[in-house]
Length: 220
Image (cartoon, rainbow, N blue to C red; front, side, top):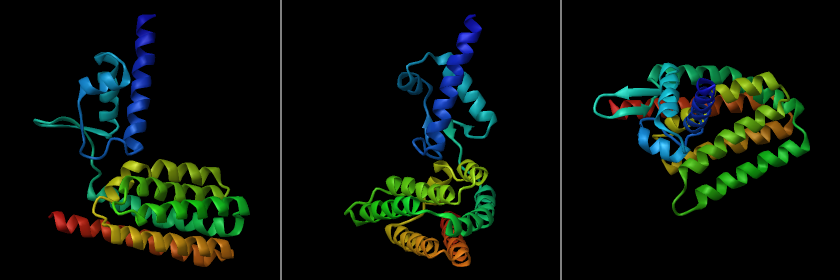
């Protein structure tokens, strides 16, 4: 009985910590202090420790010498693979959205772009907020494509952990370019031109991949 209860608590800790990592609340490279996590989750050390072990086997958490456990950073190869997958998946999703998006979904997408513009108009833009809106924009395009399988694939691939790392080298000007590209994508979808929508999305993904490579070069 007690083992079952402990398993349930550990599972709850695992799901909460995984959600925070994928949601960007814990960012790549951030140290995960066991005692602090226990306080935050209102749990004892045992279930939190079990949860961290599972997250380690999944590659979301890494043990570092003298630092303990940290949120894993994606390798350059992993980031590149995600962009390559995105080129195919998101271009196809955008083309479907151009054919299927209804007025209600288009209004939602326009509202997201307005929120993104407001973030960048601030004297001190909140990049984390911009990243969340960026992800939401792409997820809503997938929803507009009306294909649940594609939406699940996108959610699993482009979580906030990926986006935070991809955006880590972005400056405000890079975000402004990103916003302009989002606006072009939406215009293509609104026009019903599936080829334009696909092309605009590919340009956007390629720009992001280029910025990511640029950041790697600066670090090396």
